[in-house]
View 1 (cartoon, one colour):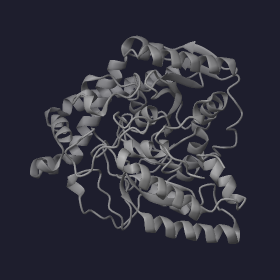
View 2 (view 1 turned 90 degrees about the vertical axis):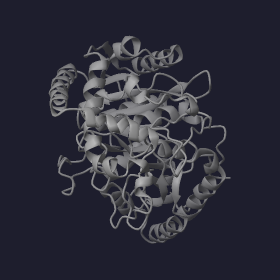
View 3 (view 1 turned 180 degrees about the vertical axis):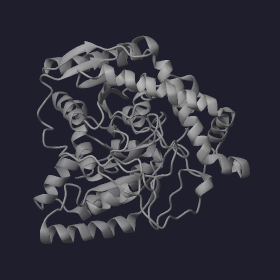
View 4 (view 1 turned 30 degrees about the vertical axis):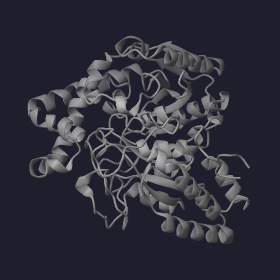
Length: 467
């Protein structure tokens, strides 16, 4: 068998009763034991719970067949998703010892689909900022080079998937927290439309910008995870009640005839990417052209406008969440979180309202710009991952963000690997579609992955899942 398995590949083998969920789970647990002291992807490994779940899945599959493609598949949850009876820390000293008595809706849906829960993954503190080295748990490291950064905040989820410690997982994304780590760790990460997946039971960062989404090695696997996750939840008042399509039905239909708008000024002038990243994006665009897509250049407001509105809203809402603890026990935060979050106390109601007003204007602009196209394309990160010990303290404020425009609008956005840089670390491209058109987005991403060889490479430190 192959050295690594995707969710789709493992599901086919499990359905054919060639692969045992128990053996697959043991292989993932073995890999965690061999690699995680170098990567720090996990905060909590639920070994016995995972093995019990895998045994139950195997028993049911042998008797009745798998109930979904996720039945018997090992996955993990970012540690801001509540888990009944299992510690949920937010990667913060503030929640040490906190054990919820309920599951997040997203985590429950994966369990209902038969997925095997391996544990809880590292993140930036409360999904806000990092990497921090003064917390009870170390920051996750990039499996392509453990001296390098993962981006955040879904850092552990991306690192665990890239290194093969699990086949898929959950992340959350407020300003780029799925897409950034997916880009730097070389996995596929989808931020769905705002409201497509319930946020109930997920520790909040910013109420009007938080998203939940799947992360996996391939776009096809993200489609399988999204199928189980999407849908209305009465417990989340922001959750949409739109019907859920079959995300795999047209996955292999290709991009011929699709109209793709390239937001060049975002990554060429507003926040220029490295020469290597620019070349990788151009090569990806050539691939879409060769596959039959029609490309055109699209202009939007400068990236700085999107960052200003989005970051002010995010900081204001995050401060509102954490104000009681900041006033009463600020010492329990790491330095980065405490110093950056405290800036929220300086934002006035007028500032916040003006940012929301600008958000409406920007959203209307994007609606108009995408009225007659199928997808947008731009960068995710400016280049390869930097060294983890060289990340500037005020990076999230000082540096423009290629991901935040689509958090401001709530549009679905997908990060996928489009090559490797001079240092051997992943590069990525971002695809964006109109709201609730994730099926088209996934279809385009899958076509690109099928037309390129990037999914055949894994981090050198990774060990085989299967002998």
